[in-house]
Amino acid sequence: MDHEAVGTAGLGRLHVDVTRHGRSTVLTPSGELDHHTAEVLAEPIAAAVDAGATRLVVDCSGLEFCDSTGLNVLLGARLRVEELGGEVHLAAMRPTVSRVFEITGAEAVFTVHATLEEALRE
View 1 (cartoon, rainbow, N blue to C red):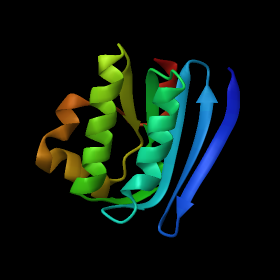
View 2: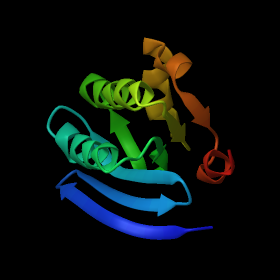
View 3: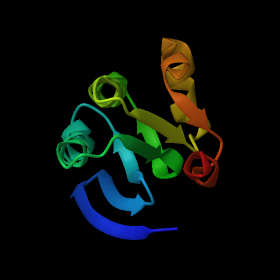
C-alpha cells in the first residue's frame, strides 16, 4: 500500500497529520476540535481537496473532543468532496466524539468505520 506523509498542522490543542494511503488522503486530528481550533483541520482538508483528493479518511482515534464548529468543518468537507464525486469516511471515533454525531444525526450522512484499517480497505 502506498503510504506517504504529506504534512502536519497544529495550534496548541489540536494537531493534524496528513498522509496518503493509496487513493485515500488520511487526516488525523489529535486533541480538541472546537471553535478555536477548527481552522487547523479545515485548512489541510481544503488543501487536500484543492490538490485533487476525492477520498478523505478522517482518523478520529486521537480526537478527544468535537463541538458543533468542528462538526461543521467535517460536514462542509463532505459536501465539497461529494460535489467532486468523492467521499469522506470517519474512522475510530472515541465515545465522546461519537456521541456528538449521534445526538446531531450527523452519523447518518457519513460512512463511519470502527477502525482506520477498515476505512482504508474499502
